[in-house]
Image 1 (tube, rainbow, N blue to C red):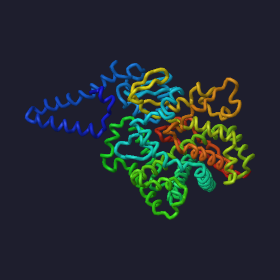
Image 2 (image 1 turned 90 degrees about the vertical axis):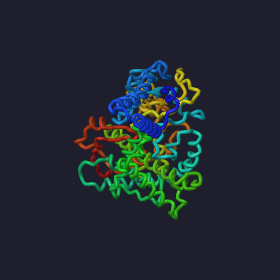
Image 3 (image 1 turned 180 degrees about the vertical axis):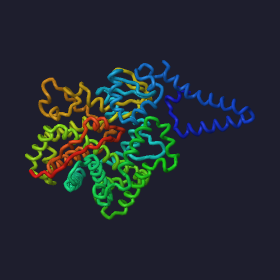
Amino acid sequence: MAHIFHFLEPRGDTVAAVYLAFSAAFFYFNRKQNMLSTVLCWIAYSLVPPIAVVLYRLSPFHPLAGFPGPLLSRMTNLRLAYVVSTGKRHLDIAKLHDKYGVIVRTGPNTLSINSQDAVKSIYAGSKAMDKSNAYRPGRLFEGGLFFIRRKNLHDNQRRIWAPAFSQSSLHLASNTILRRSQQLTTHLEKLEDGATDMGSMIRRWSYDVMGDLTFGKSSRIELMSDGDPHGVLASGEKATVLFEILGEIPLIFDLMCYLPRACMQEIHVLRQLASELLAARQVATHIADDDICSHLLCHTANCSVQDLEHDVLFAIQAGSDTTSGVVILLLYHLLANREVYQTLTAELRDNLGSTLEEHKLSALFQLPYLSAVVQEGLRLGTPFPGLPRVVPDTGKIICSKFIPGGTIVGVPAYAQQISPQNFWPNPLEFNPQRWLPGGLGLDSVLNKSAVMCFSSGPFGCLGKNLAIRELYIVIAQLLLTLDIQLDTSFDHKQFKEGIQNMRSTCFQYPLLVVVQPNHL
């Protein structure tokens, strides 16, 4: 039985239903027996399946028995789920690779492979592997691009999204991003003297941007102006964290939709927002707007309203959350490295003058030092875990090792992005110079393909170019318009230790800054 479940994992609600049916039948047929002995027998019978599964996972008969890893990880996925809940999975996985080597068994049926050679085998080309059940959101979300795990089905849905990220669409999006970035600096200029939580402002800016890009003029998302009275940001963060933790134990995730609404309030807040915004967009007269929703609405015959709601919710949440996390960390590195801050500001002023305007955006995207800063920010500002995929039934040879079919594999992005084999010297140090001609010296190493924050292949992020434009524009607008410095009370150690990544990058310590208008 344990061997069968290795290849065919049942749904959590199915397991619960079978268990309850067995328990009911057991007590019914033993109703005339002594109650104490009946209960003890029921407990014993109930423990047999999980004990058998654990023993099988630890046995030499398990397909992954030859791969090293922590004992608890070989027994259960609960260890990794706990590590995810701490927000330090990217660090934990990196340490495991330091201890056990290139391939580590991080779960009963999961391998983490810390090698660039594995990227093509797992993610790239026509033979890219399907997503794992970590992308199966229980019964809460069925459909939607992000949750499609089969590559062929994902390709069909991806074609619907693709026009929203064409060059013409990106050009219009850049103007929207600039307008919202100008609104951001205007709000910051009006703040009273004293320390400001820049992280909070960036998160609101990012949500407003994605509201405009997704729904066009029908968007009612105005967090910079109106604040967040309904707790959309907090709900989005909590829902993302929940998805990431339970993605390690899909059996439990399947049971979440059966809980009372109050237990899943954050998810219901987001779904309600998506439903209202989609309804407003559907009745809007400016259907010709080149927003993301306009492209999705052109294909309503191929998807349900529920799928559309999931897609627009994903567009807003994923687009705003990941970008804001990178911007916050990038700003921190700039403010903590004053020489880099000043060099970048000088490049911006020399090439763009004192203000950023629409007709200057083409020149902005060509600036070499800004490009280096953004690339370095992506490298150190995306502490993401591996992107789990499922090895096909026939198995696969990866890094000279045969990986059995059905195994969940992934390359840990953060471990690759700080590996001395990919970035040398000082891989943990923020230094944009490594991306410029000459790098950091003759013995320096720069493996550009090791930056994996956007993934690659058929499941790669469609919004990559859009996200990079957001980084260029908002950083340039902030530095040209404002003089920003870390507040004297800012604690670097607390800030770094408070960074948690659970697909959403959470900050337990605010990025406190002092902002003044830039009159130069």
